[in-house]
Length: 297
Image 1 (tube, helix red, strand yellow):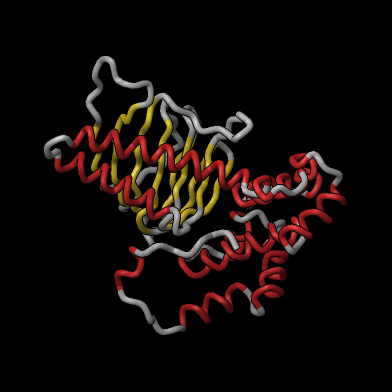
Image 2: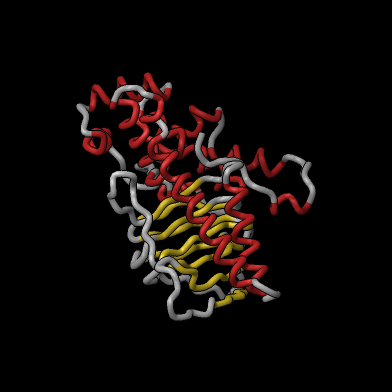
């Protein structure tokens, strides 16, 4: 694995929240991925490529343009697809933890690739470049950019988790947003309607009614659509078998995955892969450096 890392000098009298290090890594054949923890928050911005991110016992796909926030002392690691190698920037920050708006702590936050993410890319790329070049006032510039990045992140997370409550609608709207966010973050895991109802503090029948009214489909239909979206990406960009993709995305069996995929897409998974691979390449070779489309439907 190719890695460039720069540590920030630590001085007495610094502010409570401070930058510790910034690095840029690229997957190579010698990458040995092992779960590990840090005493600080880590921000992972995916510059290129795709793969999986593992946090504690959970795993989820990652791709270019996405950001993963990992809280202190949370076990994590990354897995890259060899045919589309990961490249990412990591920023270590001490003295902060990211929490839900109500104060509840979460192991990680996974932010899909959206236009808002371009700002995070600018901050992280600039901090890395400043540390590499070390021109006049580079530390002050990095600290200023780091503070702005944290404020932007805190605001973005609050918007994502509280967006429904800001519409002025009833509690059900906010709880549906919580359920939707949970499925976006944990769609590779086993999720039942009973679990979602418990999360929303609702009767499951009322949850289905409210969620369908707000989102346009039932919670389980939304979950399946989320998984199908990711399965299409894996079929297009990896050599994983149908069984591997089915297992990674939380389907009960490969046959059930194939059945749902065909119903939604109109063809079997392997037929879809062949059809995509048969299409002529219509984008420039450098297109993998551009932002990928959002993971959420």
